[in-house]
Image (cartoon, rainbow, N blue to C red; front, side, top):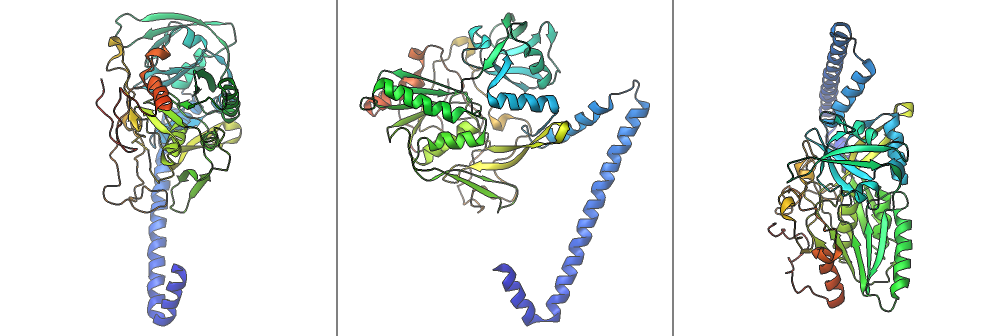
Length: 461
């Protein structure tokens, strides 16, 4: 419609508008040419520096590593989640999303040059050895990891099945480091675990990999049959410390509890680059009540599921505020040279909320009793605490999935993470016990409801 209007005005105004349009095009072309020339001058600068290093550095440098480091530097300047994967790393990522690899069963991240445990994977050597969230891995087989790249540390922890590796762990609140020797196993990730908690089905989803929805569907059928379709009070979906994974699996898992409506939308660089994912008829739980557990370790795909079920009022969210990773990374293969992991979009909940660097607040805030030695050390920084993180809103001021500018009061401030501690004993897990009580009685006697979805979190221990 806009193009037609301009054309009609052009016919009426004649030569005057034609001249103005020509001048505008010339100015635009000149500006674009100048910007392009400036970029090429900077690329020439890079080439000059590269040549100087090649020829004059005190030792002969590894040129391939120099170029790879330059690429990684470029990507890391964008946001914490964009990165380059060489052919080996790309292959490993594909193996992980399929859910099987040789190693210890431990998820790690890098903060301030240190290798930090995000979470041990259930029923793996790491979990059985007692490795905990927020543990720092300071040595691997006696070699310090300070300054080591994350993928290098991961490579050292992985290896052939039945071989041993010794980790030196610095645990928050403990002066002396721990030395733990583990035997590598074939880690076949069970992304879904389920059990009957009396008349309530408890389902824990640890990450979103290729078969997560199929595993969820099987778990729902199994535990529902075990309890009895007529006796079951409801379902607890535990997404705590779930760091995310594949977008399509997040959509399928959300769809398992919905009959209709939008699940999530993604919006890229341009306002018209919007993708919407909607639910199909067929609630696998037949409309039974659902409680979703989240905490500071619930991120990305886990937040998509939590946000969709919260917006549709299909589930009550219990726990602490989620991590706040509201961006989508696209894997772009580069032939034999690996792949590019590039942030290409923000995602939005059905109501149009961007959770990037903000997180999702539970409907009911329940704080765990944190052991004295972990108090103050049980919290994640959240997305807002990551250096160079993407802002919650596009630079053009629009932060809604429909591309419209936010209204006064609609934007939220960035917020840091929250507690990610889960007691190993389910009987002492206050968040789980609150969920069971809510499903059985319709209320929680020991916890006050925090109000509408998105209400501020209560004070922490």
